[in-house]
Image 1 (cartoon, helix red, strand yellow):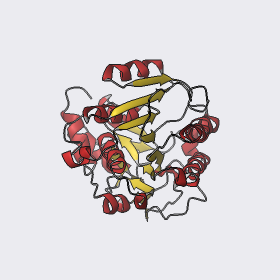
Image 2: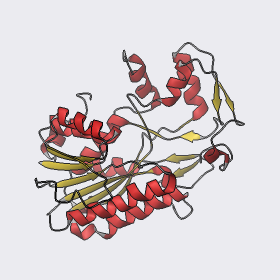
Image 3: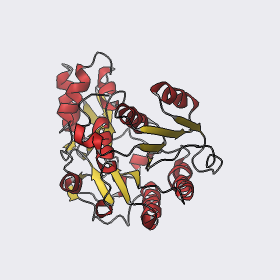
Image 4: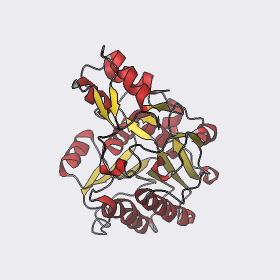
Amino acid sequence: MSEHLLPDELVANLPKSVIIFGCGYIGTALAEVLLAAGVRVGALTRNVEKAARLRELGVHEVIVADLDSEAWHRQFSGAYESVVNCVSSAGGGIDGYRKSYLEGQRSILKWTKGRGIQSYLYTSSTSVYPQDGGVRVDETADTTDAPLTGQVLCESERLLADAADTFGAWYVLRLAGIYGPRRHYLLDLLRSGESVIPGVGDYFLNLIHRDDVVTAICTALSCHQSATSGIYNVSDDQPASKAELAAWLAEQLGQVSPRFDPEHVSPRLQRRGGRMPSRQISSAKLRKTFGWSPHYEDFRVGYRDLLGMEKV
């Protein structure tokens, strides 16, 4: 992780201890940054290999378990000031979503009772928004018509909101599309020599770099005021069409811009007319409340950094 991530004043206000549930792409990066800041970190993951990596990083307690069970509840010996739930889907379609996001949330909330947790942060997704047509979307947007997976996320968000009195502060961070080191599918596709991209390229992509997700989480954790509790979108606020991103990446690689093939898309996208909803996600609330801003201000800055790495 880059040294630019956390300013000294933010580090000074971080909790002394944080437990992370779901140490995948974001959770592991977060653990690394918190450890470097002197925070005592505990972690739960269902992956044995990830657990080994976390121990190598210096995580103080690492438990391997399924989040939705309660078997792990007595395995953590340390006390923690803050909780971060950044679990990802366990696979298996909608049932996997319910297992990870909904039942997992219930399990954590049950575990927190009586433990004096000061703050609880949950990473959700901007996929809860059903809006289309290129409209600007903030946290007040209606999520009633969210897809099934988005409805599960919304229900999980409500579980946390309903338990608000338990914590000094609670946060739901709805993350835009995450990219960063080892996560750049479109770049990999073009590097492989592919000149045809499945689907269409005329809809907005809303993106956020992994490192900026970590700084957003840490910024929220550093604030102990209940008045800041609530739901926040996390994006770089610079939406671009998929075609624009693909053309720019091709140019950087010295290649001809790829064409899009709407006849070859996944069954999920076929049900959506071959494209994802096109909307522009606003992170103005996060910026105004916490003074947060992304280091990677748009995809060009983020991908230029990735392209400059020897191995990405």
